[in-house]
Structures are given as structure tokens and as C-alpha cells.
Length: 167
Image (cartoon, rainbow, N blue to C red; front, side, top):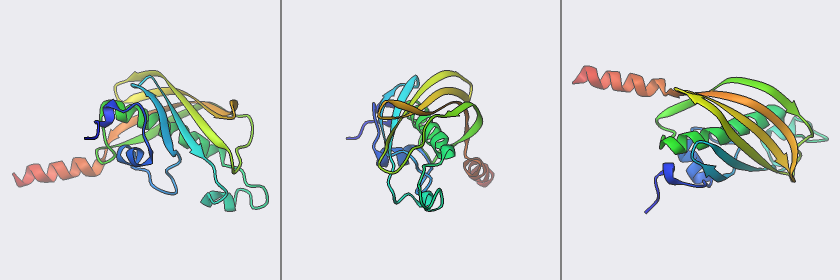
């Protein structure tokens, strides 16, 4: 029998898709190899030459877009927090609130394996702040402080209200 998502120390892509609503091409992490409650997590992305956005970024010298590194950091944080809380993709959404101190140190290119290290700085109600780093071969290629908000899916709220009206 499968463990509840709140008890998982790691997550493969199938588990990630149970936790996050993201799908190809916007699901940017392949697995989460470490989760320490809602304190820290490590996500992995294997960058391939067939990534759809690399065809135009840049055609002769493909570079993984920096904004997508930030998104992958946030997805790693989202998996960590939602898994810890036992929340699945069908029940909530996670929105960016802010991105601070973003720095890009070196390009990420096809063939690289990116390690996203995420540590929770603090959480207050439904808003969390994370210290995030993206590393390739132990070298920091990007870093940022990211905050995100957990929000219940508005469609779920509307469905519950309709159900109440029927009762």
C-alpha cells in the first residue's frame, strides 16, 4: 500500500503530478530526492535538448531560461509544503507572491542535471518564504528568495457552494 504523500521522503514524477497541478511542458522537476518535512527539499531536473522552449532560447546556443529555473525552484518548494500538509493537486493552487534577490551565475544547457535546494525561511498562515538555489555539478547557477501562497482552487469553492445550495 502506498504511503500518504505527507510521509514521503522523496517523490518521483508520478507522485509530483499527484501533488502539483502542473503538466508538460510546465512541469519542470523530474523528481524530489529529499524532503525534510516542510523545512527543506531537493528537486532534480535533467535538461534535455528536446525541451520545447530551447528551440527559441536560443536556436544556435540553447540555454535553459532563468525564469524557468525560478519556476522549478518554486515547484520544488510547492511539492515539499503540499506533501507535508498532505494536500493533493486537486485541492489547491500555489501562486508566486514575490521573487527577491534573484541572481543568475551561469547558464544551464542541455545535458545538465540541475539540483534545486530549497529551505523554508518562514511560513505564516498560507504564505511561505524560501531560500532557493539551483546548482549544476555543485556550482550555483541561480539563487533567489521566493515566496508563495497556498490558495484553495476557486472552482472547488464554487462546486462546494453549488452543492450546499442543492442540499
